[in-house]
Image (cartoon, rainbow, N blue to C red; front, side, top):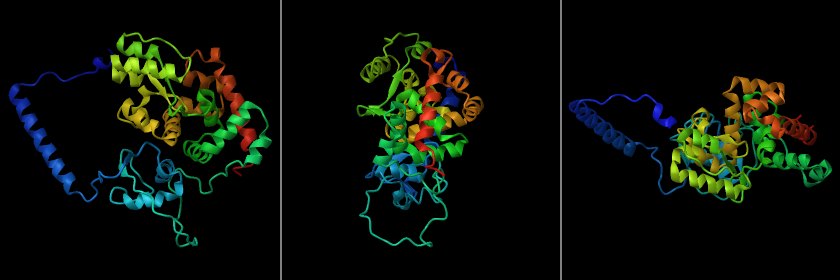
Length: 328
């Protein structure tokens, strides 16, 4: 299996192994004592979340509370771990405190932060009103673009600006991959790739892409054979980024990527932008709106058989028609 081909150190003499084990035990005990004494130890009575690459306190508050503006309460509960609200480190474990009842207050210049958390636009783009959605027309691509804009418009616009591409390019990719829907039937949208799994394990799992139930069934069968390879062999979320890209997106492994993306549509979108940002060729293709080249790099050499590039161009145009004038 591919995982077994990595270099491993040779065996150590027994005395060295004993010394290493003793040193490791001492380090572990010392770390446990230090953690216990730290004032920022995580309160085990509260739910927690691990900060994903590109996430801000605003993103996490939006995902956990449905309101990004509650990021202040999230920060106040985690200030020992996050001294600077504008510099949240990837991998930081945050406690999620229960919301306090909102108290009416009159905004003042002094009370306003000097800037929104990183990745958030100074003025978030407005959602489409029901009347505006109706005015879009009945074209499926435009309706899909309107739904995605209402669900993820601010995040897509902000992250696109961070990476340096047009929001419509990201939206077009998500719509082509999953219709922009990162969750279906109460579960994250996935696609199990038997060819990838076979490359890792030399084992065969049925190749069926009929619906999400079949994808999850194939994934379960693969996990029973080799769990790590199974997670590496699925594409995840709205943009369908493969699990074997976990480290590239900032996760320790595909399981941790799966856990983060399963629980957050925002993490799915941010993962897509990290995927683009970390590939010079993909970034250039996205910036140039070179649909065939982007499709080849993102979806593989068989992209033309599925008209991937044509779909992306269609969805990009739909996004532009729906959002023109909203972000001026």
